[in-house]
Image (cartoon, rainbow, N blue to C red):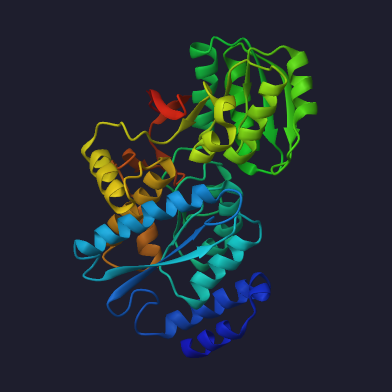
Length: 396
């Protein structure tokens, strides 16, 4: 079957059917690519790369930030002459922050659009949905900021440019013990989120290893609006601090309701907190809280300074957050790998990505380890005066 036939077929398939026929389309596309003289996505004067992100929905600020960083990197690379003498063409799909949509988006990018690599997602659950499709298609996928270890365990074509939750959990366990001086901690996690479950697990292991005590471990469902029953139970357990490994939309409401219950012990979490909407929604209820993340704009490196300046210029003075910086880094690392591979062939790009070592990124020197995870530092930020203030850097 020729590629033109596939394209016509893809156009006639309804959006609702994509998840059902996606795997078949991917296999057919791979077969067609082998028979073509020019690799899909790398022919002509451009190299197609795909991106799937939560541009709308309840975690939209994550996807928008990541996309802005991604788009800026593509613009800079193309202005400098592109890669292998060709311009990058970014094709972006919105997964609506919903389960089921990442599979639809990635099947479309691979089988219809013929991208040579896929960038995404921020949320671990959505990366885990898309990763098997990329692995089966032998298309390299780079997650900017999914931290659950299971993401790259999917296979040897799946990478990330961020640290993972065992490291982040240990960082926050040490922070709770050493900085907050907490002896007793309550954990409040989202049972619908692979990210939240994983980060809670690794925090708990680290905190217990520090001779700490978990006095309460309760669950909520992401998207809930009323957390008062669980927070009342947490208050009665008498913790010194509360660890909430969730996303900013839920975290802000949790902090508001904790304040209403006069539950004033320190609250802290992971990189899922980092959004201007945390402060916009939570206001004074999130004042003084802490979270770990991947990047602080105050970092004093040439790459960070250049990124902050160019991002502000492109986006009307905005200051980039970690998701924007990691989106930017994911493109830069991919472009570097394609250059070193000298081709857009999936296996060659995969091998070049795996060999990435001490690459100077906006978020710091980045190497890809044997598990296809990035080794790099974490930073701790605090909400202070309605802004995110740098507290400290923690190296791996």
